[in-house]
Length: 500
Length: 127
Image (cartoon, rainbow over all chains, first blue to last red; front, side, top):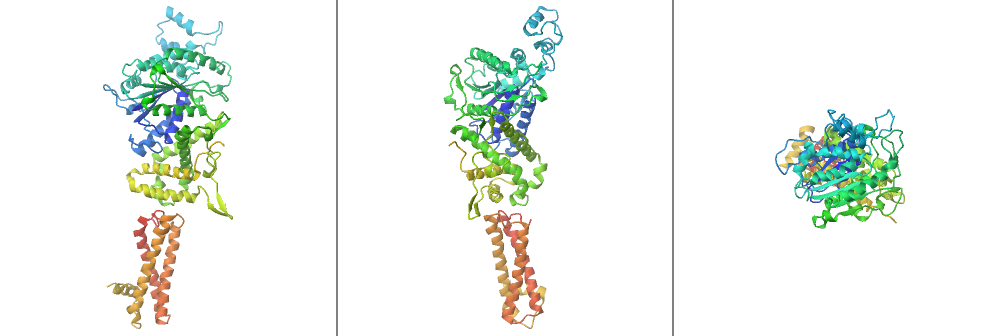
């Protein structure tokens, strides 16, 4: 089974970013060959999208070098075969080669809305133009500043909270070669998941259009469809003359939900919905390089919705006529959330892999470079490779910029998600569950996760792994080593923190 | 055969000593075996004992310390056994002890190359 995950707009991109982190940590996808994220964003330079694409590229490289792109790897970090559309062989017919990208590009968007509809100005003076002006030209009379009317909206920065424009543009999605490829590639058992926000422009207009375009294909309409809509969870600051106003988020959400209840009825098997009280106010940036919002807990939880959907056994799924709705709850409301707030299923399937990955991150970035004289370091040839080989460079960048950056952003956001104390030592890494250092009469009898402990475990594990994995697959051996040492650290922790 | 190997080894470097037949009769053999077995046991402890237990005595610096210990022991075995057998300490005893220290070092290097592959933490010691 393959899973196609469409992320529409900035929110879609941010949730796919979170999904990338969860999959990197080793969260399991049952019975899945490939997971194919496809980012759809008309805002070509959107910083959220750019950041997500970089994380996805790094993941793909690490997995390919580590496991050789094999589909049967089911355990450990980066085990999920997260790949691009171009890695799929279409079910029907032959097809021209696609660009190896996680993004689906619209054509001809570096223009205004009116020029997009009427590139040759054929409609000037036509009655159709009068209709368009009636629908989309909201210029106040006598106002010389036309730049923010919907008709003159630049499309390559997104729809800026105008789903009425998004619908028109999204309709042309079906003409792109990538979309045609998707229609040909989806097999009978494949699942489709669509992520969007409901308060912006790109997501709220794109979601129903995408569902319609996919289900117009007879071959696909009976496939399993899942969707995640994110309701407002942040505000933006007021900006004079700006096109985005968070005071309208709720009314737009209500309008979109009303539309969905009518026009998406009978089209989705599993519908996930998430919301949080908007506590944080972001800067009002209308797209492009400046729209880069910090990661939020809601986006991480949104990514768990994808995992939940993918892992649902076929026998448990309801038909589209009996759409199942899902939301997510935590044990108690706090301004700072950590691992204690999750219920058992999330703790086991999501929190535990994240904990292991965080241990691996700290050990890889801070400890292993200092263990140059150890045998395991030399056996893995890390001396030359850590700074020059692109597998290790990608791993460093993934841990340092992508994963650590993602954790820190969630810690800085409101509501905070702070499961780990990333700047503290390994014994104090897990928030609210420090590993105790045991002393008897001033003599340390159990120092927790010390350098000696790490050197011993790394040495012994590398010695064992070398017997199963040859020197030609050192990268695979290294990924397994990281996973095993993270598990050894977790054994010192004994179990995750829980609420009293 | 082995008896004459030790005699050959020592007399090649230290020279013959026809004044004291005890060297060929017993001293060379005893010192030779004692040195060889002791160095082998020390190598086992370094590479297999400590080297597979915990990473606390496994680096190049530790190997050099062990090498020095082995050399000292080699010297002392030859010196003490010769003195106790012959009751004298002459220049030949000193020369013999010095070259036994050299052989102890050579045995340790050879055993290091053979045993390091079964070690975990000392697998890359001395290189």
